[in-house]
Image 1 (cartoon, rainbow, N blue to C red):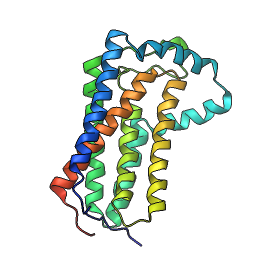
Image 2: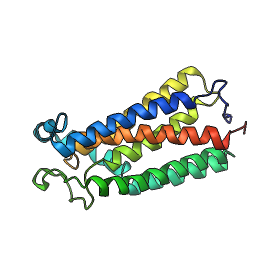
Image 3: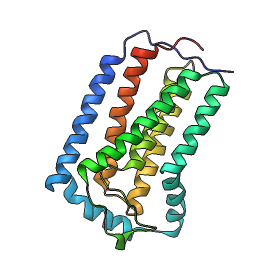
Image 4: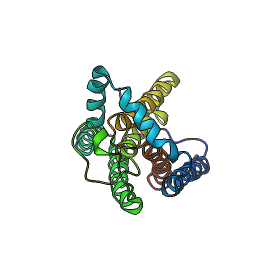
Length: 221
């Protein structure tokens, strides 16, 4: 049975604007800390060293699939699959929102990395092949957060039960957290890169939400 999109009785745009502002402030704080070497970026090397020392074969076996799913190829396939599924179910507005959100976050990832041009952790600590892009912010964390966040948002504005809405939100948070931490564990990113990825993901999700509420004004599908 299809879920319908429910137009909120209250205007959520002021709340989303406030949340986006707060998340943007956190991102800016993290960016400044990485540029100037202030806290929390000063603890990045210690966190990475701890993650390297804590490596275990079983954890590594889990970290690799997670990091691949949060990569460009993994998220592209997931996005195309989910958009196709939504279109087949007649939810073209949801497919449009998801596709637009992911395209925008992908472009923002490239721009932000070029702007901050932060070096990644030493390749001596790395598990796997070196990455060719800059480190800040973590694209895996950013784009995964947007993908699962949009899907959770669909559940939140649907007629699903409160329990399912909570489960969708928790699942989205856990997925984004797992992918982000896998990047630190494998030494592809500093912790502040991942935190910044999550922060900018929240900013972008709020922007997407505001645009969807303002322009699309989804009706029952």
